[in-house]
Amino acid sequence: MRFEASLGLAVLAAAVPANAGVFTDDLSRCIVQKTTDTDRTLLVKWMFAAVTRNPDLAGMASLSEADRDKLNSSTAALYDRLILSDCRSQSVAALKNEGVGSLGQAGQVLGSAAARQLMGSPEVSTEMEKMGNGIDKARWKALADEAGVPWKDD
Image (cartoon, rainbow, N blue to C red; front, side, top):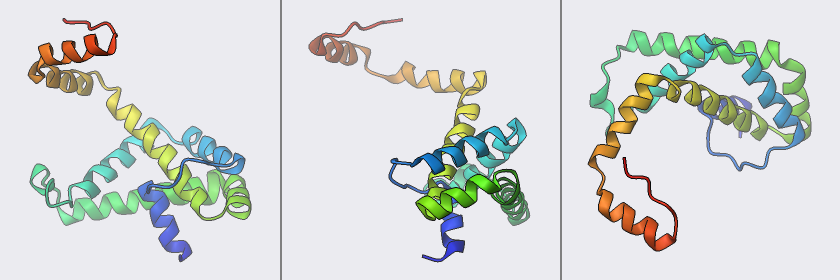
């Protein structure tokens, strides 16, 4: 696998086995610590723009190619800063000792941190809670009873 392709996977936080080594853990910690709320918001916007390329989601967003290009450039600059500057020594150590996959694993950690920030918004939480209005509460209670766990019915 070419290094450039691996970097792309890191940025996408591609599915990589979750058995990170100590050097990948150090890199992951560093890139999360070196990002700001603004950086994480940018990353979530970029991920959103990318997933809306899926034909099943394409109708849910209207982003111009110029907007997509700007998000791609800004996200590339963010990763350049994190991997090549802010966390350079951790990046070198992870690559040297654990291979190119360490970038993908560190990207997953950063993507998760960005998603947690997004999901932590009170507005997002309120919207997600609305799904509960449509569930079959009686059947869920029966499932909980069968499993022997308490069911809290609002």
